[in-house]
Image 1 (cartoon, rainbow, N blue to C red):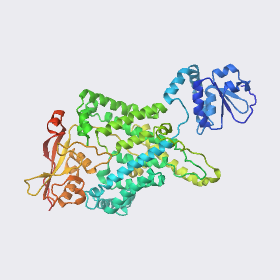
Image 2 (image 1 turned 180 degrees about the vertical axis):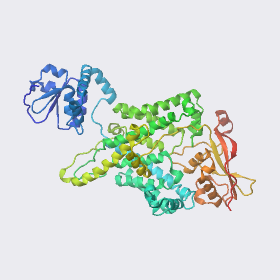
Image 3 (image 1 turned 90 degrees about the vertical axis):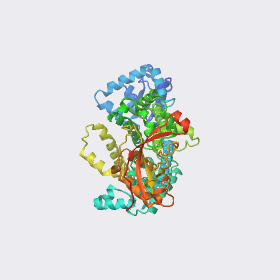
Image 4 (image 1 turned 90 degrees about the horizontal axis):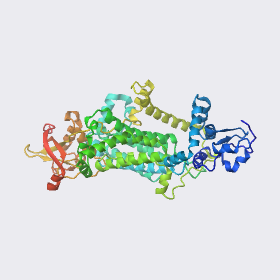
Length: 618
């Protein structure tokens, strides 16, 4: 290549200023390379470079080094991008990987020869602007929603915690921890990390819930965000590890995993001398995106792997709306839809969970489409069933797919949340930065390994180091398995608790939200989760021998435990507890439109069998 010394010290990328495709991508690359590369249209500066024939500028971009040497095509693009942070890998691949250079140049020629087509395609995929997206507003919106979900979760538990695991609750924390201590010894602190090793009284249980509420409000007010997020995660983990079956749901572990990742998303400090905050880490944003992918994709995958006949023949939604734990009244109407529509809906579920979910890794508009479809799907689930805060949490993860260009339209006047740079004299010392960076990189590296190994090793024979690390961190629930409704329940057994003083006249205890009286309308209760009502649904699918907590629940009713009775909707023995209790199993089905119009019944039911023998206190 001929070379003519270039005036100035910075390299120049020369492009065709009349090419809309070129202008789009120059707008994308310019912020990445900041001020390291000068971008100029050939119509303005072409005559300054006599070493390049003017007609060549119409067919290719040219990269001119400060010494006057130049190159064109894909090599020119890769040289310009090598000045961007972490952008040298493309140039290295071009120079050292066999076959990469000719393939890259062939691809460049195809694009250059069909600019109009690729320009239209680019604008359709990325929109009218290819500027590098920012995520400042996105991060703030996500952290606000996450703290709102934590707030709901802590308030929901606060109203129930004493009846569930308090000293007079169904499964007291104090008894549970004493049993763990007797059987596990000193390793109990690692295997059951919880603040309740310090104290397990009712007051402390409620205090942890209320402290979680306070920390949530701090994040919502954008105060001490990093510390508050750490406290919320620690408080919820403490509750999770002592609540036994009552906090064993996938959304509980999803909240813990999301809350842990959020610790790396949050800007922990503002550097002195700056007016903004550092941008979110692209790696952390990707891990959140991959978490959403795992939640959605595995929910579709387990349906295939389970070989459940209702999913295989597309009849699962014949049963889903009436057999789910806590349906809504909209779920009743959805159940009445024609079977053909239900089968079509099952096909849509598979398309969304196994296909559309991949769009979240695409460019801007593709990602937006994936986000819109997933949000629509979550809204439908929310309208037809009560799944605690699961839908809200999934929606929050979906919103991380939208960049500031979207939120700046919804939140006018907030576009100034940007990082304004640092003054070297005001940075923290080098060793501190390296120390904390090392911790972050190490923890994120472990997360990436936990995510990647199951994808790369399909045989299940995982490396020993992976197994060791996975077992070591399992009690902290920072990496979990997901997959809802692998097997569809096709019937709805419901446990009805009856009390009596004479073994002849029996009166039912009514729950707040689960089906009981057939004329009770299914209500909306989410994002609150009545934990006892949910456990009763699971208990009805087996027997009382596998659910010893239910016998303990009935004993508390015989004892007249106030915290436990307050978990119920009605108490047929307000003055004194009954002498006898028994549980019966009924089969519940949604009524049809004719029945509901005639007598107002949302349900039909029939007695199946006794669930427990008649119980009485000694």
